Image (cartoon, rainbow over all chains, first blue to last red; front, side):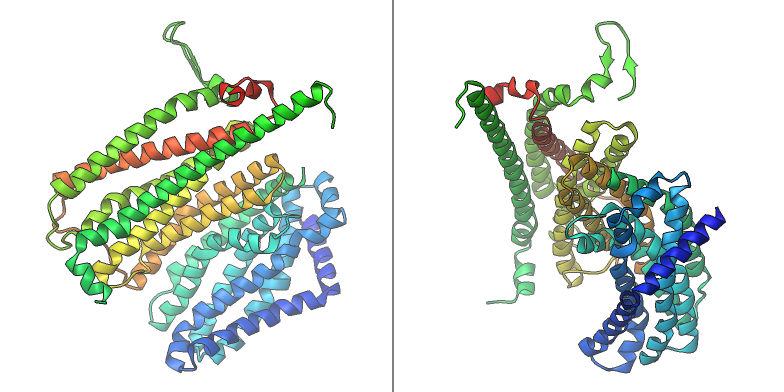
Length: 222
Length: 62
Length: 255
């Protein structure tokens, strides 16, 4: 099981590295979206400090979502996906591997970049810390829920926008808890409940989304 | 043109009626119209198909 | 639709019979007029009681009368989503075509009720708290519910193959329904953090006439929803089964 998982992860990482431009455009998009907000609402620091967590989370959400279309489409187009589904190994495991690789390529860089951007919004060190932890818990869930959407919209025209439409409402709880945690730490309140709820959602996603995504792939491929 | 707030407070029932119920009834009417139109056009399509089939069966190939 | 009741041979109801589109088409056709007329009558009674019998509210004056459409619309939008997801699940598990058709038939009705709920909620908010939109928990959850409905409809419309469309949308509906409590809870929490306002009536109990009107309007909306959804599903059945002989034998087709 674990070997299969690592194999799939390594394969997807290698493929992603060959198309480094895609990975970088996701990051650039993240930076640009974050910069748009101060340009739109004005440079007043007090307001930006309040908005910071929300802006960074929403931007991370949107950036992560951009690359979801590619999760299955390349394999679908060259027939690899069909082979994966015919293989005796568990499709859920393969899917989990692809989700992990997607997170490592699209989610993790955002988590590393977010604190740098957070400084532009004059976020305090504790706030940045909670932001990082929150994004570390949240971005994998984004990859996992997004994979369901990617599987359902496989090969459809207008797939990218449709995917966003389907998946954004499902992201909202993570967004609320993630930004809520940053706000709580700014007000000196406890973040334990926020983080434990996010942890619970992460575990739930880990348990259910690979199986649901595999099911969705079968629906899309028959 | 008095502001909406003032008008609203002086004519609460009109506000409620035109604002909420009229809109709700409009939405209901639209939905009913849509549903009936769909049924009509589906039946029409089926009749066309059936007539086309009957024509081709009679040997009236165009 | 899995059981067979046999109080006597005459009364035996084979539920499987009605899970076939052919027989359901006929049953729905008979039920629709009853639901439609009942809905119209109940609407009239409900609105009459709501506007002419129920008294003014001490705090909210006449504006509270919006609830007679707002509350039923909210309740229906939520329950219809659950019913839709239920049919979707049935369709996926038992592979029954009719279940998937019912899910597709319910979706637009549920979405429109969500729209009515949001619109009337906004109109209620303006006189009460001075703003058309307050990001309170219920309205925000309702908005997200509308997004879930629209996603279902959009996904179904984007897939050409009807079987794939049914099953993909069904999976989405089920995933959405699992998320609805999570979303509702998180939005509740978000709202209390940001001090939203809650809607209260003067006193803890509502006047009897208000309760009556509310209940009647609720039933009226349910009957309306049944009538519209059943009409829609009949069109869907016609579309899907257009190549079968039983369709060509129908009186409305033979004309």
